[in-house]
Length: 252
Ligand code: SF4
Image (cartoon, rainbow, N blue to C red; front, top):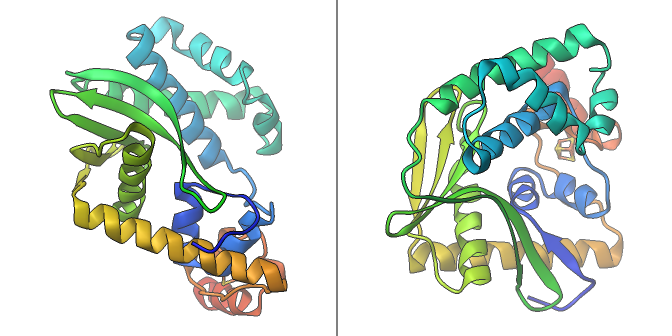
């Protein structure tokens, strides 16, 4: 990679870039999509899953209180931002998370080692790779798991490969596999982390870094690649390609 201003690369940035380089560039400039009720629900569900794994099962009687405790430790600002200040609306979300949790609770967790593992790796050239792994299993090979609260999306393979690279660089050896597990649907998608996959992902991430930095240096907007994701893009109102796509998709 060409050296440049410090840049933190997450799986989200990588996936965003694969969808649309312009939106990824906006993210690097600090322009993020708004939080939504769905992202709040997903965040709360992940906290509850981690609590189960580290502190044991949560009874139905205690579930609402546990959710409120988790919300109170860092989710209050988002709560208001997504319009869940009304007790009836919050209650509905807690019920939905409860439904997910009951499916999660029925799973087996043999070999579980750690939850919500924060990882960072210095990739050189002032680039920091960063991410959080939902769960780590060692049985006896290392397997890392990303819980999904909805369906597994088409770009799961690239996301999982990024986690494989991050783990390998932060811990010094690659995990045997990285998998996405949908708590909602029961789907499971696993990626084997071998040398070819690590090399391909590292090469793609490095090319992304160079492309983003080149655009930042000259103040460019970046290439737009419109698609269904435009509807959630924070720069939609100033992107002709995105507005055209949104009009077609929206049928206007
Ligand atoms: S509106 Fe669509 S095409 Fe435009 S920057 Fe956003 S994601 Fe890319």
